[in-house]
Length: 172
Image (cartoon, rainbow, N blue to C red; front, top):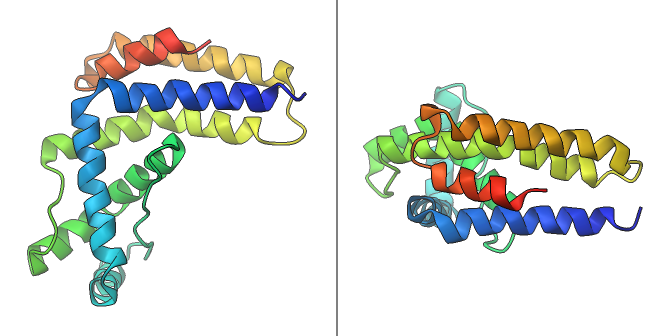
């Protein structure tokens, strides 16, 4: 049972390497998203304005998340939150012109990244449970591999193919 944390760490390294070593566009998007979070973290007025917009749009008033560059899942959560808050952020940017948002192409990449990494996030959480065994984890890992192989042959994931190919090579 003590080797499951090693598996989680290995999975973390595979994902981290695929994000930060392969795709320049992913790095650009992460930098842009960090800037958005920094803007709101340094201004209570901006936070209040965003919260007001979220309420007007009937969007869950979530705060912006910042990532820790050494933890891929924090980057995933940051991208996921930005994508969830895409419309309120666009409204804020249109009204106040204080932040730079991803382009439409970059938002498309964010959506693809969130979609491809959601199963990894789920597996990471599953592996972290105390009652989890390899007998329960191995089928999930195999399912991830199949998902990645299907994604690598789909035009839907154009823009992140290098990352997907790297994930296929590095996953078990």
